[in-house]
Image (cartoon, rainbow, N blue to C red; front, top):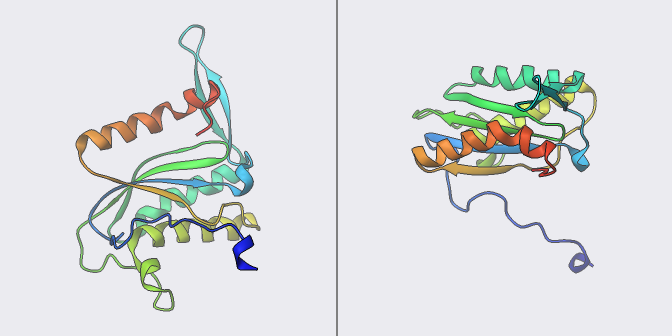
Amino acid sequence: MNDLLPQRKPTRLENFDYSTAGAYFLTICTKERKPLLSTLETVGDGALDIPLPQLTAIGQIVEKYIRSTNCIKGVTVDRYVIMPDHIHMIVFVSPSEDNASGTSRAPSPTNQAIPHVVSTLKRFCNREIGCNVFQRSYNDHIIRDEEDYQTRCKYLEENPLRWSNGDRE
């Protein structure tokens, strides 16, 4: 009977400590990719018009908790964009012996800094919103070097333009 259920592929890098100091590019999607977080509105006066996210009430709650993530010891949100149905964030984890900041009840991988950041963000948002608005998991990319970081920054900054041009990622 279990053979009929779709098999989830692992989304985390096997045997990697997500409390390791470094930079991480995270993508968190809304449930069923519903456009709950923002709308894209064109700003400008002609040829150089650019679309910018205008946060909905739910998006404003999400932004409030993204900003409060910096209160987690050893964690800094470097930059983020809140798109209609997903969030992109670059998160820095500082070198520290106590970055594993999850709860003692949680299994080991959840005690690591990045899963803790994501679960805390989702939990606080969902509590204030009154329902679960996010998909079960999230995507991550471990930023390897300065060039990779610059590529991710550019991707994040250009995401609203790509989205308005039909590239919905």
